[in-house]
Length: 310
Image 1 (tube, helix red, strand yellow):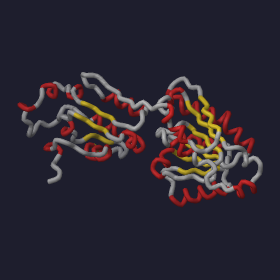
Image 2 (cartoon, one colour; image 1 turned 135 degrees about the vertical axis):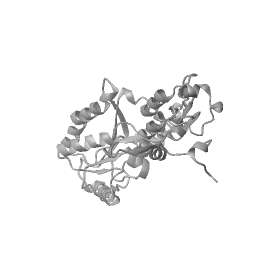
Image 3 (cartoon, rainbow, N blue to C red; image 1 turned 180 degrees about the vertical axis):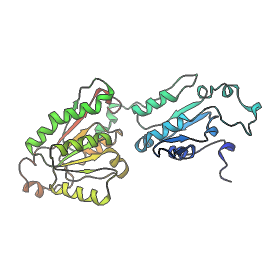
Image 4 (cartoon, rainbow, N blue to C red; image 1 turned 180 degrees about the horizontal axis):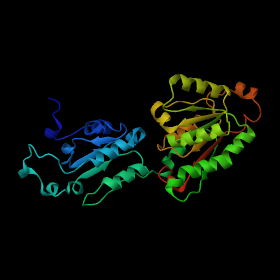
């Protein structure tokens, strides 16, 4: 056999959602609530390796936290257990303090670091290894378009206020300028879907003409929105980071770019900036007014809590 049951296995290869489906069940009284079932096979884990944490972060990081919460708990059933082979620290409920937790990611993210600090309880402590990138190898060096890149720092006091502070700055300083100049061909890149919802609601409230490309939109909606944006019938496009991660659209028709928060992946920044002026021929630009033929621009809104992305 290529596999065995959990209790007779030395190595478990699984996705977070797969383990969550095995270890939880829906509550009959409340379908949204999930109760743990049999997690005894996770009580004796010595090494937990989470690879491609950055990819799991783009899916649903709550599944990873849910699985890690189930590790090294006291077994509820003692059938078929040879206690002569059980280590003493497992019997004392100290298995989590001897377990090695290894998280591998292509970038540092507050969610990943928070999970590591919370679940890494090894008695030997914690170790973080980070690759140092020289300045001449930074992702901004891959920008091939001649455009003025402006990084605007947004003031905020705590990490919980980052989203609201960035939205307030966008609403008070950036959006009024866009509406006053009637600026066309503006692409707004939004890393978080929650921020996308906030910006979308703000534009709807201000009655701004825009289209959106998200990971949840239908193919027909995306194609129709991209065509209207390229043709200039829609002035603004909202583009989410997860949509770019999963679909890697090459947006055409953008001359002005606004980063509503910096991308998680460093290579996404030059990839999005290099989209500027893509698909806009000289003939199309000559037919439009002077406002739409303004010099290309790139504005990135960041805070002091975006140190990992910077």
